[in-house]
Structures are given as C-alpha cells and as structure tokens.
Image 1 (cartoon, rainbow, N blue to C red):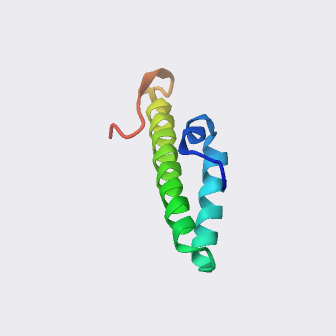
Image 2: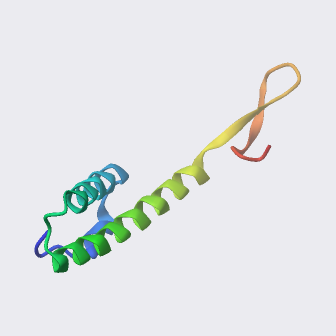
Length: 83
C-alpha cells in the first residue's frame, strides 16, 4: 500500500478495483493494521468503491433490452429497466 495514491484507481478495471477492495476489507477485518494505515486504506477503499460504482453504472447504461414485435421479430431496443 505504501506509495500508492488513489489516482491509480481511475485506471483500474472493475475486476482489479474489486480485488483491491476485497483485500482492503480483509486487512481491516483482520484488525492487525495500525490506526494510521487503517485510515489510509479505508480512504483508498472509498475511492475503489466509488470507482466500481461508476463502472457498474456505465455498464448498466449500455445494457439494453431487445423489443420484439407481436410476431416475435426484433424491432428495436429500449433501456433494460424501462418496464
């Protein structure tokens, strides 16, 4: 964790950020991390969570549902949660 800034989070894929976030949770749950380091990694965890949320929102915005005509043929798309 030393030397890492939260700026590198922006370049991470969703999977990389999620893995890093899971490691932070494990470290904090273990309880053997000094207080100052706990604060730093907690803040990094917040940045990772926000990044994951942004990536998920972007993915959700791209997902569309195919609309079918009465005879079952595709006629277009609409947002997935439009129902």
